Image (tube, rainbow, N blue to C red; front, side, top):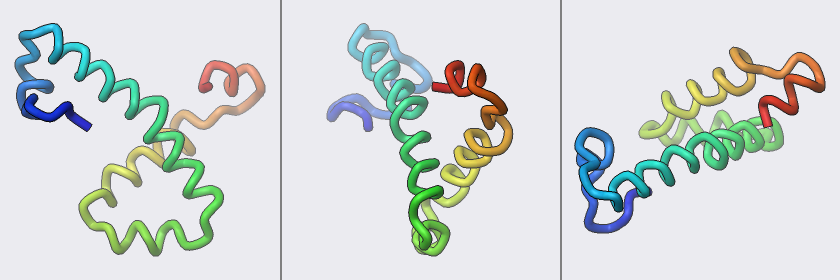
Length: 86
C-alpha cells in the first residue's frame, strides 16, 4: 500500500524522490514475498477460497494470475526448486 501523500501514479511512473523509490521497492517486495505467497496459502488451506474470491470482483483477476504464476507456471518440481522459489 502506498504511503499517504504519494500518489500511486507517481510511484509507478515518475518516482523522482528517494522516498518514492523506497516506497516503490516496499510495494514490490510486499507483492513478491508477502501478498502472493499469502494468497497461495489461502487457496491451499481454505475450502471456500474461490467462493470468497468470486464475491470480491475487484481482485479476482489479479489473484488468479498470481495463483497461476505461483502454483502452475513456476511451481517447484523438486527440493532445489523449492529452495530457489522460497
